[in-house]
Each structure stands twice: as structure tokens, then as C-alpha cells.
Image 1: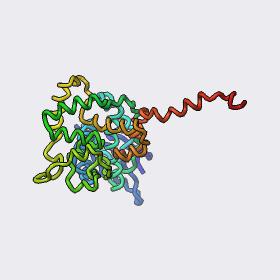
Image 2: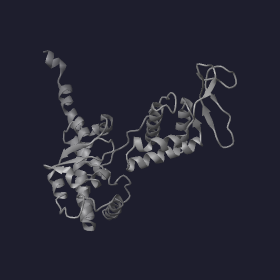
Image 3: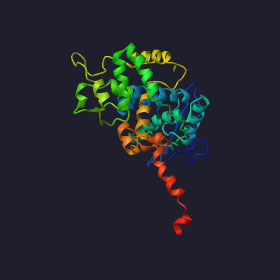
Image 4: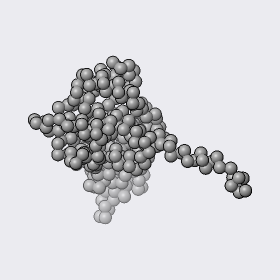
Length: 316
């Protein structure tokens, strides 16, 4: 049971700052009636202890480290055995004051939530706050029209045939760039590819189009996979030069990730239901795939026929 320092009654109290150290402490009364302090931790302490357990090496882990580092900076060395709702609310306000969008705040708080859940499970902290998801704007999803793809890919091909192969593979599979670069030859079988290194941590297998199959049909000698000779930096450099050449340099949304959006948009506009699109892209939840739902305009065509039916004529 928590004991207030000032009143002696149960409850949480915020200890006065000592020099540069701030402490948020939980105290409770043990069965023998002695007041005992629970060990306190900082976000950095918990991250150092559980980072490698909770997140695998890769870009996502790098981003999580950045997120938790910023949160630790905002907390200024705060030690705690309870992470209160007030602390969460304060963090959200300070992140927003730094110019973070609601979507970015949600990603940062999701990393903190995962870390605190693990710490609570291991007995490092006691009780968890409620993490309220901030409302996100759906925003406009940019994708390449066929003529834009043709012009951009032609400019990429003149600079790097390997980057050209990679772009074709990305737009026809919807793979994330890191997923494609991490492929090895054993990931291909019977005109299908299995992505093992994914953002969600869940593998998925999809069939390959003719273009995608041709993109990976190269000599396997001396290389681990079809795109192992490339890096993200190399592709982005070639990509940026090519998009400048074809007059798309001012469009900030035309980055390599647009190929994933383009694949999704073509599936939805082609009549593929959202559940299958979710499986194809490897989204953890259907909520992510719903960003493309507005493109399924063909699904609404039957509504017109229903509305154009005259009720009076039907009754007659």
C-alpha cells in the first residue's frame, strides 16, 4: 500500500527533486508494518535490460531506441516504481509541443507501452497506466500511375540495372525495402517468395508475378540473394537522381516506399478484397489495410442499381 509522505495516508507521492535527480516512488506497508521502498528505475534502465529481448536487430529496433531515448530525455532522469497516468499525459503534451504528429506520438508511446508491460511482468514496476491512442489523420496516400512508373523505372534502369530489378520486385510484391534486401536464395521456391524478416515479426509467403520472377533470375554465384549487392543508401541515391530527371523531384511523397502503396492500390482497385490485401502486404491488423479501402470504388457500383429502382414501380 502506498503511503503519502506528508499525510501518512495511503497514496502516491512525488518526492522533491534532489539536485538533478527526480524520483517518482511507490512505498507500501509490509505485513510486519515496516515501511519499505520499492526499487526505482529509469526508462534507460529498463531499455538496457529488455531492449534485446523485446526487439530484434534491424531498422525497427533502431527506431525504438530513438523513441525511448527521446522519452528518457523528456523525463530528465526520472526514477519510478509506478508509471502514472499523469506521467503519460505529460509525455504526450511534451511530444506534441515538439511538433510530433499524433501518428508519431502513437508509435513512440507504443514502444514505451511494450517496455513497461515487460517491466511490470518482471516485477520492476507495479501497475500500468492506460495508453490512449491519439486520433490519426488518414491523410492522402500517393501511388504511382502506370505512366509515372514507366518513366521513373526507365530512368533508374539507365543508372543501375540492379536497382531497376529491385524496383520491379518491390512494386509487384508490395514488399518493404528491408524485406527485399534481406532475401536469400532459399527464400524462393516454386515461383513463390517467403519473407522471414518482417516488421511484424511474422513470415508470409506470396506468389510471384512474371515480372517479379524475371527480376530475380540472375546468376546466384557469389551472392546471398537477388538484391544482396545493394543497400538502401544506394537505391535511394539512384532513385532521387531518376525522379529529378523525369520531373518528379518536387514531389516529396515519391520515395521507394511508394512502390508498396502502388502495389496495394492496384490490388484494391483490381477487386481483391481487403483481407487478402492484408495477407499479401503482411499487415498485423486490418486497420492498416483500410487506408486503401476508398480505392475500392467498384464495390459501390451495385448500390446505384438498388437506388435507381423505383419503389413505387416495384410495389405496382
